[in-house]
Length: 127
Image 1 (cartoon, one colour):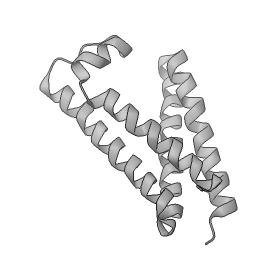
Image 2 (cartoon, helix red, strand yellow; image 1 turned 45 degrees about the vertical axis):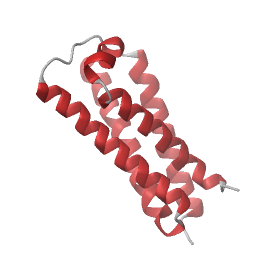
Image 3 (cartoon, rainbow, N blue to C red; image 1 turned 135 degrees about the vertical axis):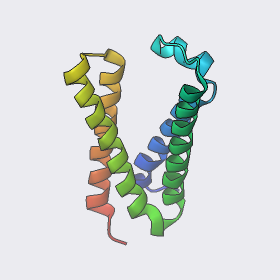
Image 4 (cartoon, one colour; image 1 turned 45 degrees about the horizontal axis):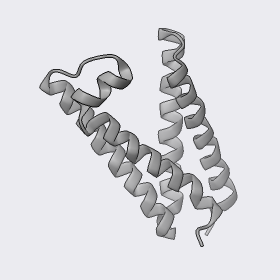
């Protein structure tokens, strides 16, 4: 049975890996449907596929931390930094660019995942 402390990493990894394919799987077809802009040039496709690669690898690292106890602490720490960084970036955008319902929900969920990760690290961070 999976330990409850691993649920945060597991959920984070699944969401981030799925989002990676939304960003990079077929950016010229998927992103215009979600974000109302066209991905037309090679450089922009490359940027979104690079983001996909980063998201997949960090998500896989978190999964590894779920199943390999010696990596749990560093995986959780990297998850906290990642989620807090995304939430902070969205907070900056909120002030500079205005309110977006979709991204505000994302910001709250990312912040919640960072807090949950911190809670887990504080309570289960010893081996």
